[in-house]
Length: 478
Image (cartoon, rainbow, N blue to C red):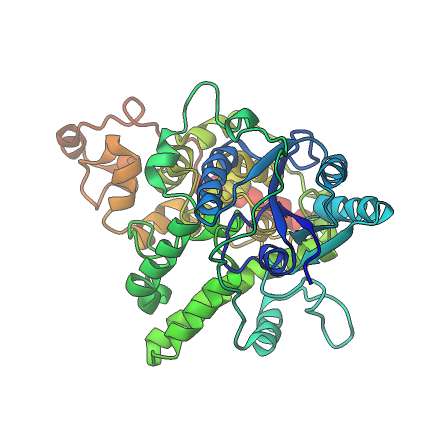
């Protein structure tokens, strides 16, 4: 039997397909009001690049809702207050949402449940943003996993075939006369427009996410294990991370599609599909850790690193941020980030190692910069991955694993095509010299129009010296 009006509160689930909260509301209620609430004073402020993506993602969601006979309503303010007010305005008897797992969001959800319950409004929340709930994966002694491999093994055993909720055809209409703001009124786009690089590099929204998944399965999945570390290859990785972050596609949709395809494959191709599924589980692992260790964005999980002499910043930080370090693979990555709001994962590891271990700068400084500049800036993954690079997190890379940026460039961008794309002043250098232009013969530099120290910076540090200093600091720590 119908139960009048339900509000569906959208957050990081900006899609119609496999949206449990929306599906349940559409099935049980006469009227459904899709709602997005912008809260500028939220505890965790969204970064500048992510705001740009959010603006376009909300436009896409609104268009999809209109195609289904509804629309997106927009309000601004504390969600506790807004949801209580709009429930009263509409006479809604339920508010549905898909759970989020960041510490501040968990606290917010508890406050909302208490507020709605006091008004006798049903608070319905669903598992819509992860494959498994963070509290579901525990060791036999009932403690959280701190090592990825057993976490992944356990998750594979639990998952099997996942169920996907279909996209609703026609949605119940919203109550009449409900006040709403516009997406433009949220002022998510910058006043001085710098965001063309992001919108040029990406198609945003649920339809784009589904196309990206199909394209990756067709062109990239079979060879993923071989190509995922090659930043010059457009189809070497899925590029689904921002779509996942904003919930334009669910991890269940991706898991189901990839496992179906894997069943058709064998040998190395099937193994590559499994490697990709493990990357989805790495995302799950980050949320598992954040749930059990909510201070992970600020504090090292390995307590001995509390005493490591991190530098909060130094004179080289700006060069790193702007991609002017004199190490071409580092500079290419940082410029790709600035231009497109995204960086290839292999290069993220290289630039992270360089910031922490060559420049001696605190990993939290890098975490903060990525938070502001990545369109896929996810609190759990961003903090876990920076701790992984720094060697201070759960199942982290050992601190003494210090990437040589020059040899990493030669190994993973051997022809220099990735560098040429994002560091165009080096584009005419032969592959032999593009990873260390300062070492090239004068005639090669002249022919390529490269003047180290002028048209392109000299290396800001000596890698061997910086590496030795980092290892000395680590030895003192131990």
